[in-house]
Amino acid sequence: MNRETSEIKEDGCYVGLTHDHLNLNDVMDKVRSPQAGALVMFAGTTRDSFGGKPVKELQYSAYNPLALRTMLSVCKDVRTAHGLIAIAMVHRLGIVPIGEESILIAVSAPHRQAAWRAGEQALEDCKERVEVWKKEEFEGEDGVWRANRDGAMGQKVSEADCT
Image (tube, rainbow, N blue to C red; front, side):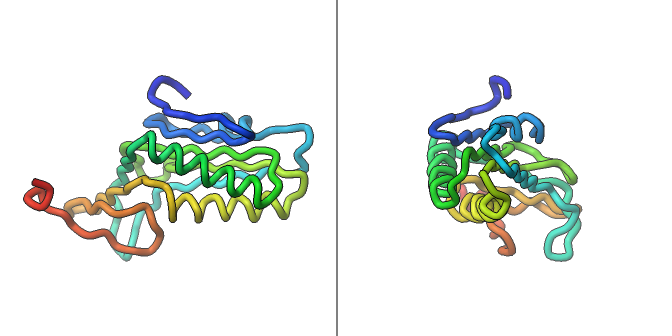
């Protein structure tokens, strides 16, 4: 990762926020270990529609110091709960076009069941707790900012509401 990346490495946990394209191999390498019997990678991508509407792109924003601390807390909790060797979570910020990755989560564990479960929990906890916001840009419409949660439509905010 380069100068556009904010990151923390601590206690078998790596978290990062970046405006760069995400690299699956780089993130997977952060959790590799000879003690691991399983490596699991989750890649969240921008899909082409949401709620029946065509998506143009997504934009992500965060207050980096707070989001990184929360990401680290999520990773430490998941690592402890599942007996992981290591966990890495990297979220992309800025514009993420259709088909590109917005988040990568990699885990390593002695056994596959722990790795599978930990990867899913890490994603769900990230979406629930981490202070990352998403602007959905739809074809032919204004964008909508919302918390980075599944299934809930955002609320349109006008410029006047922000002043």
